[in-house]
Image (tube, rainbow over all chains, first blue to last red; front, side, top):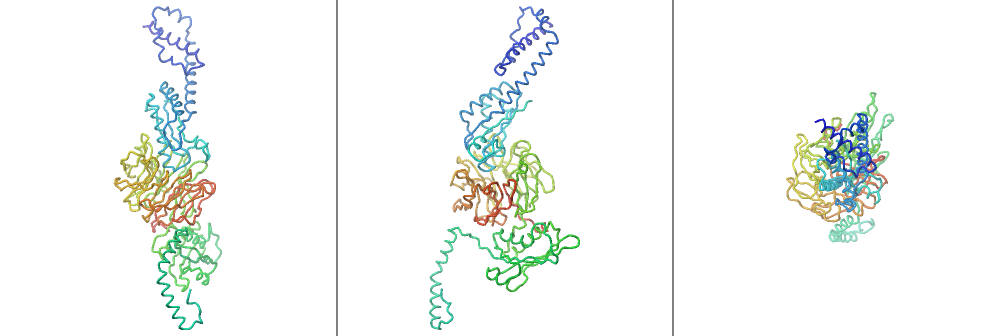
Length: 191
Length: 435
């Protein structure tokens, strides 16, 4: 029993070390979740290795580093999701090619990070009535949500809301303002 | 024209008389034609009645908290769509006769020792000086406007046999410190009062039955939700079984609510009971539906649907069957509302990115454009007597609220400052509730 425990500990530690080394590009490294099974190899002499490299101190330090790295990584992911808006054509709720490319990246993040709950906001430009624009914003938020679900994101983590024309990103009454306000915006919360 | 020369002899007079008869008989159709032309060239279709306005006599000079009573009466007269004020600083029969003002209003004002003001208000026949109506009010200085409005509505009733709108109010949305809040003001823009005071977005106010309170949309839960508020009372969330609700419309007979619900990206109209919170789907259509509006007797409903690819106005029976399309012109027709007189529909249409207000007959024909070349003009709302339309426009640079007659004439701005939008006219106030 003890041996198995140490093995597992060892395996985890190695993973952390490997992961720590590749910190420059954490978002592309999916190792943490699948790795722990790999190093279970009874032919290694692990006892000596553990005694040499892993004191209780270094374990705690690694744990703290891991949490810090994880937090930084999540923060960066959230920023990436919230920074990019999906833009729409006038009075349309279908996705442009650009929108699909962006949404694929967002979907990739959400599929790999299941602690996120995302509020998908639909917005419109200032033209037209409040009423019609809320329904238009609702269609936009829903088509974005549907795309993400089709990509494999759990629909329960995607909450669609419409703001209609009530929350413009840019003030102004010209096409340059309108085009930035016809958008779907993400707000991320962590469970 | 004949019959002018006083020195004509009898024969001439007879010939002229004969000529006159013939001319009259022949010209009858011509008069009708002239009437029609008058309408076509855009002269107001309103027949306004001149009414004399004389300042109140004040025993000792009174410092009025907003305006002197005769100024309030003149404004009520000119806004009403029924009268044309003929102001005069004293009773002037020559002026009143020349302007065809057959009646005039005036009164006495006395400041009482308890700080209140006693207003004796009179409506007289100009020529005979017969008293047609007399009303007396004893009010606090800040309630003078209300009393004068109340008198004016009695004048309307005395002369037309119809209820006036001088005592009605408007609910609207004002941007205060960057936040949209629901406000209530007298129909002429005075006596403004802030109703909502939270840090979220408040929009789409409509009046509950009997003007008991408002229903509006609030975003405090980061999504559009309907709330009810009673004046001086508390706020209640409505129909919480739905995630997103908006576009409220109050049934003038039963108080029932029609509203839009968004679920799974589709927006549909539901019919709900505000008291017990129950609601059922009103329409079973594949398309999105917003902006319901009841007909005056709640027998039919107007709404907007995108079923044809662009937002257009449709009508449907109160049971949700028998849908028919009303608007065909243009690519964006929205927010229709039924005239209280029942004969016409007012709606907003977008052309070249600009919003303008139109009316049409119930079958969509006889379209009249009421606003043009003056910025965006949106959110039309009928006065309860159907004579006037309140709307919001950015024609002066910022969005403000205006009142016009139902033919688009006599446009008067009634708000200033901030940004004011989405006026909704109250119902008539019960006479008993008006001081």
